[in-house]
Length: 608
Image (cartoon, rainbow, N blue to C red):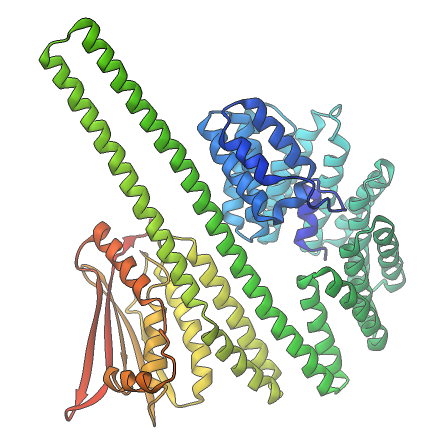
């Protein structure tokens, strides 16, 4: 099936060929920061619309997010809707579908108010995203609304292209629902219209969809013909990313025909293009398919080689996803900081204006002392409010900084390399099922950690699930020597701050249990009292012995960002109370170290 990124290219009207570098986004950002003229923001939005494929650059993201906030502040409602729609695309590319859907809904309200064809784009986008979540009936309802809106704008320049997009996404929904007969009907209509108006990207997408549907229906000659048409069109348009998809599709078709050698030939072609164009998502599929084919051919050396490529690339993709999310956090932090600076400057200017006005009135009218006192009280109150607002913003920035530091420590190379080495051991043992199982767990842990990093509070069930995934991956290194007790005590419907507990569990394993001989035991227990208490106990060598080991090492290493965790708890105490924090208890047996217990007192909120 055609991949989600290709559909979003169609939905947002992006060109096939990149014009990278054509826009100086830094200069546009300077203009936006120093202007309150509607015309300037209209020009910026029109420039972005011509180069919407530039969303991958940090400068473009910062410009769009800033303009979205700035136009709302200036009450440029329709422009805010347009920039908000652009911002939703950024979140879609990053996989934040919930956030993207909320932004599209905000844009839809504005576009509907102004009776514009842009509302059809919103319904088209919502349909595609909803289909990706498996709700095909609702997705088709969204596309029906998009069509109804388009029918009111038949004279609009973009009508034919948007109608073509609606047909293609409708076909996409039927493909996901495995209703191939209806999918073919809409693809045929889309193909006819795309050929008529010269919409190459839509035509190419239809060819690829036809190839996949015919493959699933075992109509292999028709499937091969469609895949070949897509490859030819891709080379004519210089769209190598789609040429890669076409070669990959032929590999799938020949594999289903029972011709693995021919299948490998086209997978190699797709791999060559994928490596040249850095299409990592496509390369992952190629490596997985080649691993399966070589395994079936009992060429375990080749199978192991491709599985190793898959594992290495998966780690690289996870790292890129992590860096991308960190980039988004930094961009949002910078935009909030700039908006805050503008607001602070405006407040200071207002203060100066009030002060001058008071002086003028005092000189001209010679107000009474009581009136002057009233004005002085007002000024003091305004100053207090200003200082309070600045203090709150500073606390929020510090909390974001320490949460970002916690994420960096949680994704440390030490754990990542240990996990990958353990998975590689399974591969070398030719335990394919277990290796795939742990790869999936590793990827799921990375995804959960990145998702949680952007939230102030998360559901306790999500935090427990992440901790259990982490412990399963760590346990893989200890064979059968490590036993784990994980007691939740049935706690639910509670929200807690993310990324605070895992570093302490890592300390117990790395500094307490790793150096212990014999059976190793770790216990993680949650209790809900006035605060949420998490207790971590181990039967390791104890803190004193661990410190002695650390002193003997050539270079000491801090297992996680201790200063950042302490600062984060300091901020939490300022907001939620002084009883929050961490307590260490050294366990003794016959006056000898018998392990360590860490008691963590966390704030919590009741879930709605």
